[in-house]
Image 1 (cartoon, one colour):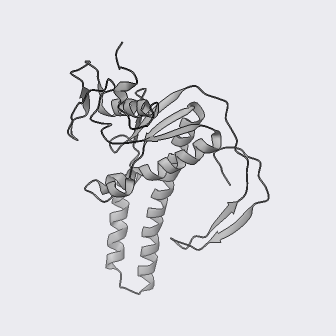
Image 2: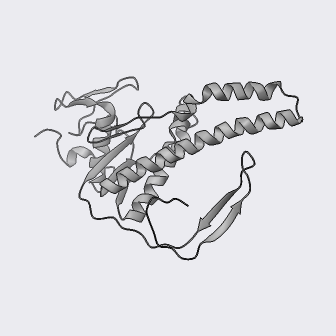
Image 3: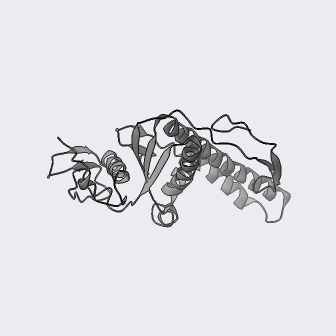
Length: 238
């Protein structure tokens, strides 16, 4: 059993989960553990999750989006056509369906493993992590549904939340409204979805749209309440 931190645990209890896909059985071990608090860190970071890049940090670091689902689309189309050609109820169709399910399961495992690795990196390095309080379910129902589900932002934020709590880190989820339309000086900078660069006429700050959004997210985490205008905290230029 692999965990993100080495922990001493009580006697585990095992539950067997019925096979959801591919006829595979899963054993779930649950036990009571004490939080494994990491050494204190004074570093802070804002995280803007997205679709073009998986996430952009307030220091300018870009976490590329692996796009596991899109990479597997050729195999999925081939497997889906094989299922469609098989006679319903036949043994050959059941085998074809199992192959299709196995591909979907592999993509899901790749996505979750990537999310765990990136969340662990953030938790190990930063003492304060700020993210947007997103309603991913609503985003997944629009025109960008495939991209949203492929990125798996909701799953990543959940993983990040429990890892941060276990490691004694502070995680702030701030109001997401206007993070991409606001400058860190507090000025409004309207943008279309296709506009990828941020140019503020008020202070002259120029940077990538996602990096500025991450900076705004971090500054909102420093205010009370978290949705207060970031211009009340600090300007972006001296």
